[in-house]
Image (tube, rainbow over all chains, first blue to last red; front, side):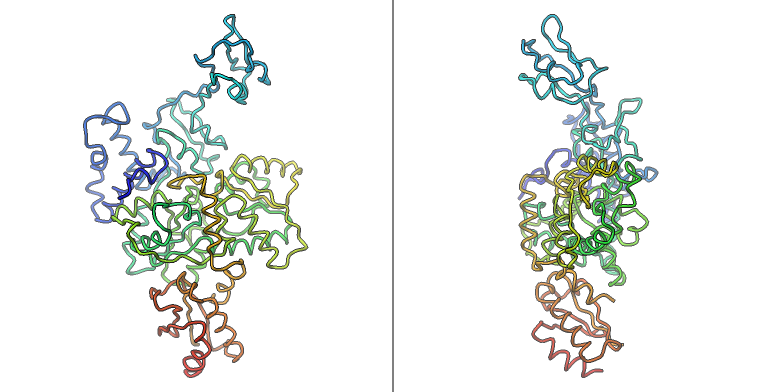
Length: 479
Length: 80
């Protein structure tokens, strides 16, 4: 038996998972409404607090998590929500000299500071003049005693698009206009005070009704780096045991996108990718003047879902991936008709366990729809490789691809800034909001150094070696 | 209009669904039957053990890439 907590990176994820699992368990049994209030006490039965000041606060926060597990506040359009009472109101003073400062003689901190913000008192102890400090962090890096600490809130630190501030009570506040729903704050908040809304109940409703409809699971290629305690084939069997009609690779949608996007690129001469919903939403909010350059292709998720719905009557599609922003994307007018709901890998783990499905003892099923190129979309650089291949396969070799691969939203911003100023030496921007690409997504169970290698290995296992081969069958059999 | 639906789910894909679909498409054109046969696809017919799965006007068949030509002569042309 695998120890549950080892399925996740952090205890916060584990806690969130326990809530999702209990909610799901009751939903399957049609007992959620009458028992929903008991979930916090089921998870924290004792009288001794383990996380907060008292069990009552712990349960109050859990009650908020239950609400989010059931879809969250319907009046808030954002899929990312702050749990006010869970926010520990972390210090947010920025860089500060701590008591570890030994009052040395070198004063490297003073020398390295580009704004002369550091002054030294008569005891040689360093101080930071907040009115001059630009929070560059150079002093903290150079201090041999690590005596300078960054008192930045983990959520604000994680939010590179600067959508998080503090409300009057010092709790985190998300600016919905700026938020791109990437989920970085969800993953980084050490108190679990920011959560993505879950649509696990919608998924259970669809699956319960699978006698009258075919429910398809479209899984992101980053699944190859997840559920590592079991085999991918066992995950597929697990999904079918949950009631899915079958499982299809979103990577096949990625193959379709690579083919269309390379054609569109050759035609237009410049494009920014449209696969990552957080990147697309970032362009729209922060660089509206560049919106016209966003590729007109639907994302791989929506592309394959559209194909499924257009070829199979009475079908429903649930996307399962590492991404919280996909939950937002699924609500867009041009995506809504194709995607019925979105689950993260975290939520899928809770769903498996709500039905007591132990993946490790299952038979292995198969998953093979896409090519190598569609599969490597899961990691940074994969999309550019696929577009380059797409150009080659379609004999669009007159067009010379100059891809700018942006790994993480900060690199995206740098490239978009350059494009805005017309100094970008590239004709294609591959934008991935999460560092590492989708394998760095907030909805992953685990994030590890081996993830990229696992995606590449999974890519190489694909039966079809080229994009045209994996996509050709779709063209042949489409109505 | 006769309707042939080929399964293009993972299991059938591995067993050669693409080759079956390509061959069928060619046979349909070679026999000038494009306006009489509609070729379509679907992901998984739930009979993965029997792949490559296909249906002709709803009737189920299991056809490997090697069997397509014979299958076409007997089951398709024979019924038109």
